[in-house]
Image (tube, rainbow, N blue to C red; front, side, top):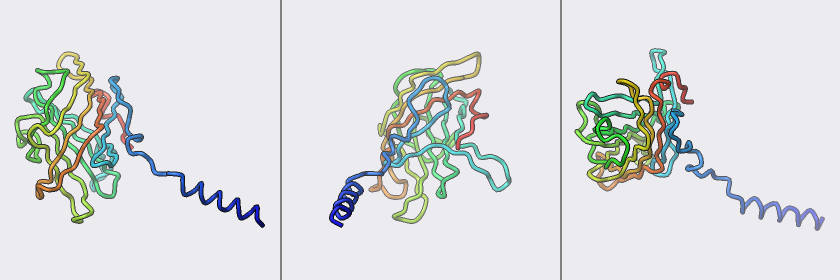
Length: 200
């Protein structure tokens, strides 16, 4: 009986001391520059990655899209459609055709994209906020972060590879006292194969 009691205590001590929580950073894809079609970051400490979903008209919603905005700039648009609360993050890199590889300062966002967005590099995201029970839009502001493009490779008229890292602070569009941090961000996109890549 004494042996069983000692074993029970040892088991309880071991169980209490073990930490089974997963470090969100360990879930991020590795930083690569080989066109792996990966994207990930931590949004306020929570792991975010793009995942495909189905729309109400039975067509695919792609988790990751890269658009040319027609003014030497690109937009990386990532959505997690598989989450019960769909999150998204949009990154605009201004004048990437001109400046190419290097560091870009993250400036102000108005929460829109394309011709409706501001004429600079920015990041904004839309996430569910449990405290207020609704979706909230978080915007970058002047000099709020940095994005580093580590590879940009082109074949006549088409960019194949876009790789880099990013981090920024964002502010709630409805509450200036509510800020979040986006960090450990990374992307490695092969635009030719992107449409065929499944994000699960």
